[in-house]
Image 1: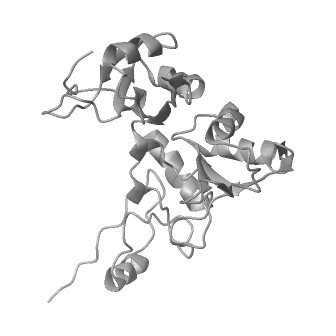
Image 2: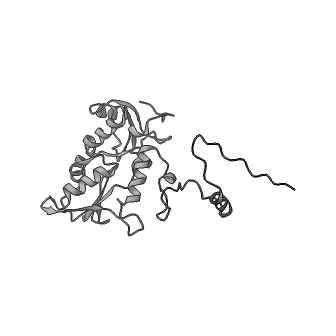
Image 3: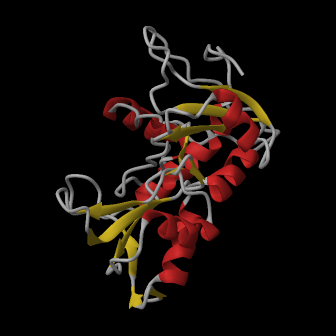
Length: 252
């Protein structure tokens, strides 16, 4: 435990905890989380004047597998009457677009039930969100679940679409992208996600244009027209083992 953020930490093994009760301390979180997996560090940002924490904490575990396991079993566990809301720390790496829309939800379905239902298919990168009326808090009947890979989201759609949850059949599809009519889960998005997992930058994952002739490397532009014409006019190379004829001599 420490009051300072470590300079080097494994972001893939980090979890953010939100909505913590003021009574929660670093030592208490350490004792709770170590029941599930080995803990490397617990950090709770505090106000410099009051020394009260902001309701958030960051926990680093020994491995990414440990963090994923804690995400599954500790999400929405209540501490001082408040459910813990866990979120993976390295969101830039794992938010690949495997985001699902869950529709036709019964009013009795809450975020914990949604999490417990869908976490069996893989790691959920942030607490499931149920859209609610701002004044009454009543569910609008739909929500969202986000995974760290498309294999998990595909399995969730196949297994849960049309299944009953609290006596109502739910619909499970890919959510629409923000400010767009296009849905997540497309071919290009999957290629980029696969590249992220292999450490390939996004600009190198687009591939050749659809009209690119077969065998042409898109990384290198074609030769200028004059050079291409000169190359075509040159005679083919001689068979192996045969010396080419000498160039013709020109007399003045």
